[in-house]
Image 1 (cartoon, rainbow, N blue to C red):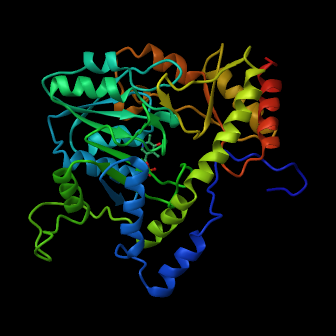
Image 2 (image 1 turned 120 degrees about the vertical axis):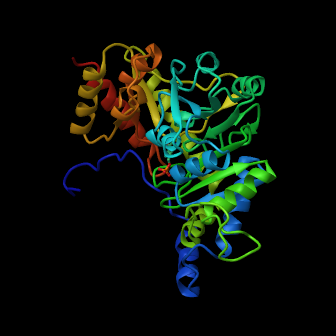
Image 3 (image 1 turned 90 degrees about the vertical axis):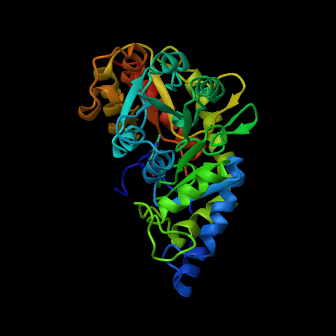
Length: 373
Ligand SMILES: *Cc1c(COP(=O)(O)O)cnc(C)c1O
């Protein structure tokens, strides 16, 4: 980074201002650096409280948490699992890891969350379940999705990787499905460097999650492996960072909300150019990245706006490409909402290291770039 220029506004950065260093140092000094140690059980207990569940099973990342959840639910070859076409690729990849088929469905305008009507229309006799994704911090309609699952005898996994602390009807996301996953990658609301967790209220499923996470070793007979499992364990060092993160969760979320409020004020002045997504009635989102959607234009114009932002020192990224345009998931089906909205979407910087002046600068820059064609 040049010291002469104004600092670039980074898209995301971890907030490690609490006890992270102290707790990691404890791991190093005591030698508990692998997947046994006091921080792992502490982190699982603390996180289950945040998610409002009886259980939390920590993993080495969010992708393995997804695979573990599907494996524990018995997903295998011949099965179909319904997935929204707009998501981070890990959601759909996890279905492929099980040898099953991800069936893509369209999303809702603005939130880009799974459309419950499209979900129900895609159910076949091969459908085993659905993964609802709370994308960009905005809760999916988990109540409608849960009802449909009950009616058709399907499992419901929530992908809450981007939505730590979001609620529906006052209840935390991650507590609605048979299981849910969260990610603790470096740009997520809570980080452990790399890391993930599966939350659940189901005792039997949780036993299965723990079994498969630890190579399938029989809990009452050491080095006896009755099933094929995985090594998806979180380390004590990761968990040490996570425990420190959760101590400051309310504080960090408060900072994020103040930044989001400033964005809302600044972006309201740009209403002629951009739309800002809203959480549906009855739910409360959490600020992850700040999405905006250009009111007119296409992917080429969106890319031009991002290039303009970058030239003025503001990082941004495109909203996720829908899965149905990626080589591994190509589909001829129609996804009109996903095609339209994802092409116009830009994710702007949001993290606790931003000042309100930084937010003003992002909004002003966006206004300047979006108003010139
Ligand atoms: C980050 C993310 C994941 C995967 O998490 P990793 O920890 O990066 O493996 C899964 N789903 C969504 C929606 C994500 O944003």
